[in-house]
Length: 350
Image (tube, rainbow, N blue to C red; front, side):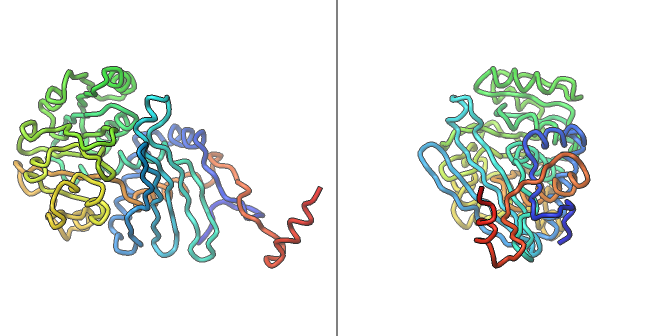
C-alpha cells in the first residue's frame, strides 16, 4: 500500500472533527455526499472480496457500543460507534464514532478519523445510493420522519443523488422539526413542516424513518403505506429496536446489507429467520432485481454495515491527500532498531 501522507516517522494521519468540517466545506456537502455514495457503490460491486461479519456489540440498558471490522485483503478497517438514545436528554450525541484504516501488509494504521460526522454522511449517502436503485422513477418528494441529527444529511443526499426537490418533515418533538427546517432553508429544497406522520407522507414517493428510541416502536402502521413507495428504514438498528409494523414487511420486497446482521438488528428481526430478503450488492451488480413494478413497495432495512464505513474512510483518505485537513499523530512507537523498544524508552528518560 502506498502511503499518501509522506512522513519521516511512523506517524498516523488523524482527521479531527474540525478537519472533517473543513473538508466538507472545501468539497461542498452535496458533492461530498455524491463522492461517498460512489465510493460505497464501488465497494458493493466488489462485495465478495471483503471479510464480512456482524458487528461486535456490547449492549446495556442505556444503549450499545459496537465495533465494525472488515478488510478487502489489502486494507483493514474498523469503526467504533455507540448508540445511546438517552444522551439527547443530557445534551449529548446519541451516536459518536471514530474509525481506522490499516495496511494489511504490515499492520500499521494509515488513517485515524472522527466518524460522528462521517457516519451521518455515509449513512445518508448509502440511503440515497440505494434509493437510486429502488425508489420509483421520477420520485420528487420524501417524508422525513424523525428530525434528529441524521435528518438534514438524509434530505440533502436524496436531493443530490436521487433528485428529490421536496422534503416533508415530522417529529414527535416539534422543536426538532423546526431545527431541521431552519437548517434546510436555502438548500434548494422545498421544506414542509408537518403535523403528523400521516401528514408527512402525503404525496411522498420515498419515506424515511429515523427515530432513536431503543424499543419496538410502530412509527408506521400498515394502513399508512400505499402501493408504489420506497421505504428507507434507518432507525431500527439493534435488537429490540424497530420502527415498522410487521404487516408492512409482509407487503414489501425487502433489501438488506448483510442478512446475518440485519436479521438480528433490523426490521426483519420481527419476521421468521427464513423470510426472503435480497442483498443489495446483488442488485447493484445486476444479479438480482430491484424495483420491478409501479405498485411494488420496496423497503431498505438499513442497519449500517462495516463495508460502508470502510468506503467512507477510503474516500476521506484520498480526499485529504495533499491538504491541510489532517495532522500527524504520534501513535506508533518507532525505535531505530525494531528489537530495541526498551532502549527507545530508556533514551527518553528526562
